[in-house]
Length: 467
Image (cartoon, rainbow, N blue to C red; front, side, top):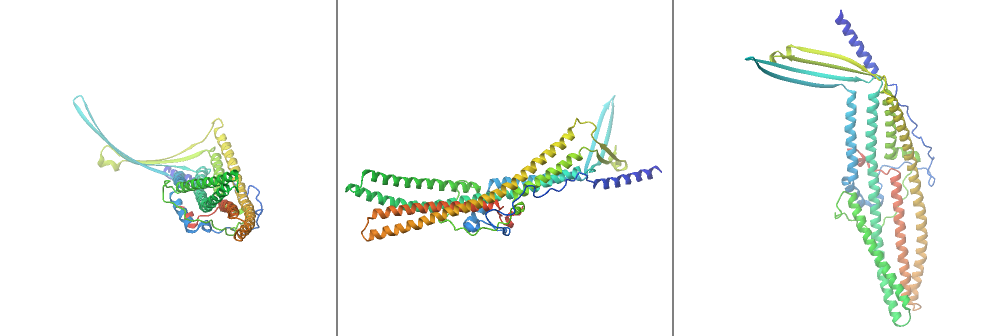
C-alpha cells in the first residue's frame, strides 16, 4: 500500500507546484504613460500629423550627406560600443531566463586502487555514472519578476543604441553644414581680400598724391589684414570639422572624407510635428527611460517575493559498481524537496524592498525629466528656427538696400561722378553682409537638425532594425 501512497503524494505535490508556479501576487500595477503633464500642442505651430519614417538628412545634403551617414553608421566607435552593450544585455537575458527551467547535469567517475600490505596485493575498482537535476518552483513570482526586469533592461539597451544613432546622425549633419558654410564663407572672404587689396592700392595712390591721409592708408591696410586673418581662421575651422567627421566615422584624421558642396541648401518646409504626446513613442531615449522604470517596478516585485519561502526540488539517479561489466545492474534514484525562508535577517530583506522602491521612484523622476526635456528641446528648436528666420529676413532687407547702394555707386563711377574707390568700399560692405547671411543660414539649418533630433529623427526602417 505504501508505494501507492507515495505515488499519490508525488502527483499531488506536482500539481500543487504547477498551479502555485503560476501565482504571482506581486505583479506591479500599470503606470500612467503620461506621469508628467504635457501640453496639448507645441506653442509655435498647430497640430499636424506625426512625422513619417524617412531619412530626414536627405532634405539637406542629398547623396553626399547620405554617404557620410552610411560611413559613420558602419564605423563609429560610440555606436559599436552601444551595440556591444546590446549583445551583453541579450546574453544576460538568456542567463537570467535559465532560472525558470530545471538544471540537468551529468557526472561520471572511474577509480582503480592498488594496495600492497603484508606481502599481499589487493586491487579495487569503482565505476559510477549519474544525472542530477534541480528546479526552484516560482511560488511567488520572484524568478519571473527578475527575468522580466532583465528583459526590460535589454529592450532599454536596444533603445539606447537607437538613441546613439540619432545623436550620431545629428552630429554628422551638423559638421557637414558647418563645413559647407565654411566653404561658402571662404569663397566670399577670398573676394573680399581681392577687393581690399584694390582698395589699399588705390588708397596708397591717393596718399602719394596727397588726396588721403596716412591714417586712411593704415586703416585700409588693417582692414586687409583682418580679412586675411579671417581666411586663416576659416581654413583652420574647416580642417577641424574634417577631422571631426573622420573621428565620428571611425576613421583616422587623414582619411579621404571630403565635403565637396560649396553652397548651403535651402530649408524645406517644417516636418510634421504631431503633438507632444507623440514623443513618448517617437524618441528612443523616452522609451528607454520608460522601460527602465518598468524594470524598477518588477525589481520591487522580486524583492517582495524574496521575503517569502522558496521551494526547491532536487533529483538524482546513478549507476555504480565495482566492476565495469556490472555498472548498469546497480542503480539508485533519489527525489527530494526542500523549503527555505527567512526567520531573522536583521531587516535585510525589508531594506531590499525599500531600496528597490526608492530606485523605482528615482527612475520615475528620470522618466518625467526625459519627457519634459524632450518637449523643451522641440520648443527650443522651433523657437530658434523662427527667430533666426526673422534675423535672416532682416539681413536680406539690409542686403537689398546695400545692393541698391552698390548699383548707385557703380552708376556714379561710370558717369564720372565718383571714383572707383567708393564703389569698392560699398562692394566690400555687401560681401560682409553676404558672410553674415551665410552664418545665419547655417544657424537656421542647425536649428532644423536640432528639431529632427528632438523629434526622434529616424534613420530608416532598415537602419533602425536591430541586427
